[in-house]
Structures are given as structure tokens and as C-alpha cells.
Amino acid sequence: MRNIIILTCLLLSLSLASNAQAQCLFGSIVEASREAEEKRLRAAPKLAETLIPKAKEQSNLGAFLIDQLTVQSEQETKKSNARKIRNEIKKIQKDLNKLDKGISEWQREDYDEKLDKTSDKFEKYLNKYSSIVVPEANRIAAAEAAEQEKVAAAKRAEQERVAAAKRAEQERVAAAKRAEQDKKDAYIAMCEGIVSDDPFAVFDTPDTENRLLLTAELGGNKIKLQANEDGCMWIEDPNDSSILPELIDASIFQQNPNNKSQYVYNGVRDASLILDFAKYQCLSQRKDGTRQKISCYNSSKVDVEVVVSAPSSSSSPTLNNSSTPSASLAQISCGNLYDEFQANEVRTIRNYKDKEVVITGTVTSIDADFNDNAIIVLGTGKNDFGISSCRLSPNKKNQDFAYNLEKGQSVRLRCNDINEMVGSPTAENCVKL
Image 1 (tube, rainbow, N blue to C red):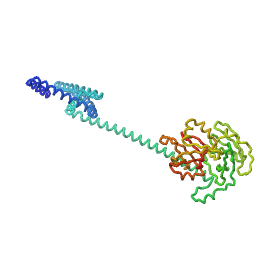
Image 2 (image 1 turned 135 degrees about the vertical axis):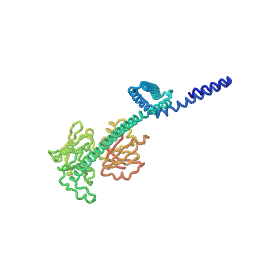
Image 3 (image 1 turned 60 degrees about the vertical axis):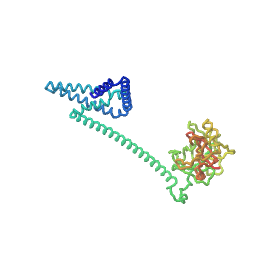
Image 4 (image 1 turned 180 degrees about the vertical axis):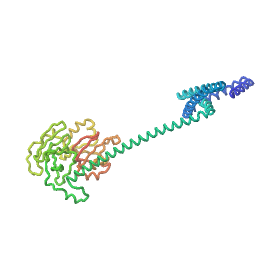
């Protein structure tokens, strides 16, 4: 009604004004109306975040209200009152349809329908019949709260289940590690006695006179081993008899349960050694099952007669702990060695097999493996954020020089057993020149 009065006043003003003034005034009104509509459309997307949920709740309550009023009309005995209620239902239904239409259009981001005004108008019905709709609104709110609590409880239960499973797995892993460590400690205690911080405890090591001594030759390299019938095995330095034998991890050999002097040793690359410490008979067994006799004799004898000729280096596996020097050493930078592996890994391994090589480069870090043995990391000089490198391992019995290396220092290291691991060249038994 107010809009009609305003429009009438405007028309009267236009009729009294001159033609030019009327056109100017009418244009201003149209422009103001257009700007107001543009402003409303710009604000609509932000308003929709709260208005659409509110309108949906009004729609649900409106449908409930219509149902309740319909029941009232059917129960009303006076026809006039029943007719009045039915007329009210028709008005509510009409505005409810308009409200639902506005919700649908706003959900499609079509804001031509003035949902805010439609919502305000429909709110009057809910206020008028608050005694009917408020209990329903409270019921809906309570049901939604209960559902949210149910979802939250399920989420908490799942989080607790995952956490419990994680703790159980961590405990299982920890127990497995403890069991493995207990097994290693028992092995060390059986073979070498209880570990002690006493520097003089080394003189109290078990008697070594009953150990079985054996030397095997592989392609010009020697591997010297000691063993006993209790399932213990040691490795000796083939070039320095003054260095005490080192106990071998029990995971890399097996003792024959039917013959206590026979062992299978897996400490060489690409093969296993089948050893008889009593009869000094040795075989090399490759991964494909191929077996080959190798030179094998009693290490305690100074002058030995080799029973079996050693096979040529082209068919012999390479020792992981070889340190036999070469007559003339090849020299290569870490970067060039990395490039050779990238070009052809198989060819590079074959080229350096059974050879000592001088590897040069700049130290980028001095790391430690799982057994706290030093690993010297050299950079390749490539601008790849340090992804490429060479990982060089000193001889486990002579690592002191690694402790004095500094990051950025240029070094020349004599190494053997050139290989590759996860894209990086590796080498063993490295010595600083």
C-alpha cells in the first residue's frame, strides 16, 4: 500500500512538473532503482550462506504448521471456523510455495527472487502460530543435536580405535626389537662373554684355541674365517693378523645342525659360501643355484698346498670386505662415477669388479649406518639440491680417519666393491690417500 501511495505521489509530481523536469525525475527514479537492485544482487551470495538454511527451517516448520492446521479444520465443528482455517491454510501454502521457489533459485545462485523478503513475510506465520511451531522447532533442534553427538561419538571411537591399533603396533615392533636385541646379546655372550666397559676385559675373552680356522680364496681375494661348534663365527683381516677377529652377525650365516663344523656364509655379494671347517672343503653357490669349488685351506698353517685351483676372476663372486690392492689404480671423480652408473649400471659394475679405485670429490656429510659405522658422502657437483651423491664406507676396523673429515673438504679415497644403491654409487673398505 505504501509503494502505491509513493508511486501516486510521484505521478502527481510528474503531472505538475514540466515535460523536461518530468523526464529527468523519472530517469533518476529508474537509475536509483537499478542501483539498489545491483547492490542487492552483489550482497546476495554472502547473504545466502545464512539465509538459505534459515529459509529451509522455515519451510519445514511451515509444512508442519499446515499439517496441524489441517487437522484442526477437520476437527472444527463450526463450519465458519473451519472455513476460516482452510483459507488461512491456502495463504500459508501459497507463501510456502513462494518460499520454496526462492530457496531453489538461490541454491542455483539465481538471486532474482527476493528470498530475504519472502522469508521475513513467512516468519510472521510462524510467530502467529508459535504455540504450534515452537515445540516442533525444539524437537528438531534436539534431534539435530543428538545426531551431531552421535557422529562426534563415532568419530571419537574411531580415533580411539586407530590410536589403540597404533599403540599395539608400536608395542609389537618394540617387543620384536627387544627380542631381536636379546637374541643378539645372547649370541654375543655365548661367543665372547658379557660385554663390558672395562678396557681390560678384552684379555678375558674365551679361549680361541678350539676355534676352527679356514681361509677361502675367491678370484684372488681372501676371506679368513673362524668358527666353533657352538654356532659362533668370526672374520679376520686377511692383510693384518694383529687385528683381533670380529664376531659376525648371526643373521648372515647358518650352521648345519647335523654337522657342527659345516656352515653356509652369506657375507659375499651375489653368492653364498658352503664351508666345511673340518675337511677344508668350500663351494661357492650363486643365486641361480650354480655351485663351484673354490680354494680352501687351514689358516693356521704357514705353508699350505691349495687343493683346488681358484676359478678365474670373471666367474668368481666379489667379496664385500675385499681390500686387495691393485697394481695400477684407476682414478675417477664422484660426479663421473655417478654419470657412468646413470648411463649403464650393469656395465659400470662389471668394469670395476674386483678392482680398487681412487674416488675423488668434496665431502658433503659424514653419516652413520644402523651399526654406527661411518659413511662418507661425496657430492657429485651437480645442481640437483644434493639428491645425487656417492656413499663410501671405510673399512670397519679402520674408520678413525673419517672422524677427522670436515664438510667441504676435498678427498681422495681408495675403495673397492663398487656398486649402486637407490641411484647413488657406493664403495667399501675406503682408505684416505
